[in-house]
Image (tube, rainbow, N blue to C red; front, side):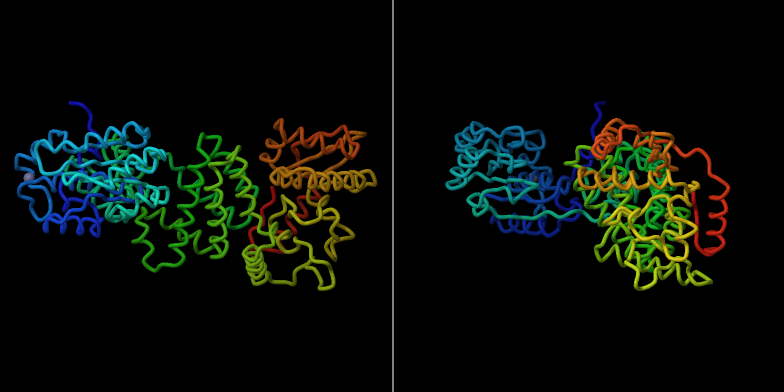
Length: 550
Ligand SMILES: [Zn+2]
């Protein structure tokens, strides 16, 4: 037997089998019952919400000799004829027939009376795809329709339909189907085909369907083929959703401003072959779950996750600042939209992850509030006065407590390069920030390297629009080896990214502008003892705060 997709196999054949859309169904049923059908309808709504199914049921119902409660009886001569395919119901896909000829042809043929039933029904799908002249031809038919003709125009984009057409149609709007209805529908199908399932698996498929029955069933089909029993693990594997724990690690790192870990995990996920778009959707889904876990008392029931996964979501939700979750969601939603136009989706994603992980790079109110909250938490968790906290008459530099608290790897993306900013009070004399952290000794020569590198960063800022490159470069520490300017980073991700051809060329061009021709980017190999001491001191000072320096 030929394979028939679940969607076609379980397509509803009467109004009472429709999933939701009761507001539309009720109108049409009443018109059938009272014999007051119109000549032109416009069905609007997202894909997979039942527009074509309703159109077909309606086409049979208007021709049925004995409609039952507004639906076709399925037994009369007309119902049987239409079930086998009849000239009286014509389906036109405007997406493949956007020519004016088809509409002229339609205009001519519509004049012939129906073969078996009372009405000839034309279903024109994706009607917004018609060309202007095709619209004009259609309009002429709609202006003077023969008494036996009914037109059902279906579209996902009603705003593209000319007003002249709109004004002649009765418009009915189809809505996205709630997840619980999709779930119930899928469960009934699984029972019918005798496929065992886990409830969580069905919930996950219904969520992935995102309001569309057709999408959900096509996803279900893939997952069903994957294993004998429909398990949550099989669904996540079939959907290509990242391993939950890895995604959780990434979100957790972003929300706690741990950019190196966030970039590292992203790099791994992408290296495993994960598509950028899928990863962004996974992240948004997890952020949504975190929001629910944070705000709803019945979150466990709402989310329908396996117990261990829910525990993990709850854990992240408890640790995270609500505003940071919201901000991350906003940035990633925007990125999701931009991905379609991005020449390098990967860079768009990495830039978004950096923005989320470094609220200190931004001055919008949300970013500032996230920073304030982190400072408050830090103060509350600190047993002694903070060393290196700026005094009031110091110009504010976007570092201080956070810099001490763990985000050491990457200097903030401030208006001025950080090397120009005043050193932190109290520590300034014995420990210039950057060298101390990468474990270098001070010398006049290295100060010169810092100055040269500061010039480079200012020039890069002016000449390149590449914010990602700038942030990556901010992670570098400079020193001279003879005439060679050596730039070191402790982050694998930064090193790998800066080793690529394009960023390397931009760097070379920028260095050339300030008269430096010999430079090299290196992966920092070992940490010096002095550095290790600084780290243990930090950890001691902030025993209640996770300090991690790689
Ligand atoms: Zn019938």
